Image (cartoon, rainbow, N blue to C red; front, side):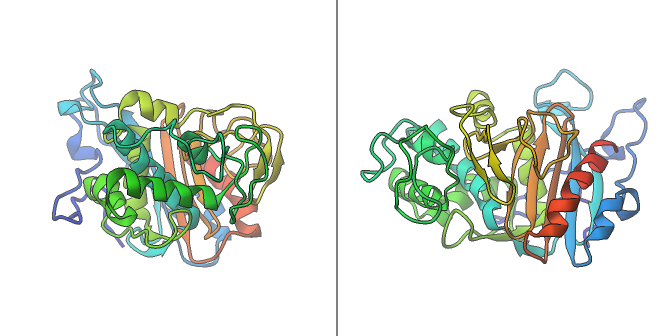
Length: 323
């Protein structure tokens, strides 16, 4: 088990990941940051009777903020909670989607990929933006077209596989190599692998997923305007089915990120802000960022998504927000 998320950790190319803020990182006069809490402070984790890994954090200062918490202009974080082995590798399932989406936005910033480019010949009128926002009309796991573009929110693994094809063509790089170069190496996410389908085929550790949560909370790899667009609803108000939670009158997604809005039922806390964004996976995994509360959390586990997750994730999220 890692002693601290803040310990420098070698990346894929031997680089070190900067440590989140800790007691030693705060200037004199600001006191010590409390140590991360464990399972005793989060009763909901007791309901998971199988191996899990949870890491929750708080954004103390944004990049460039005029505050003593952010020397050098880097965003500064502290770890709020840690449960289980943060270095253990678990299946990610659909948590690959936001990672691949982030690599797509990096390609957009580099003028390699156009969000308004056509999605595919078999999806007339749909764009790359629609693929990222699950609004292209393509079916969950086939090339069947179930609706015209931008009319319904049809959650689609196939759409992300089409996106992966676009990324390979735009970057002239195999998708796995592009994601590694654009996202995993810069963030030091050495445990993460995304072979096969970009929609669901991946593994990684909670420690590395927490690094990605910090990136989503205070982006360093994607331009501010594009990062802001990613976490806001794209084609807001579309109805659709949220896997595991049923039909939603408004099923908002951003660019590869689910936006909580007013969805009910939902896997995040009832006390989460409507601006909360992230993703969950059928492997029993989640990543969420609440920009209003300035909190982030990641959860991985050894059992696929089921009743125990559906019943306890909202309470767990509320307990993290209350820390």
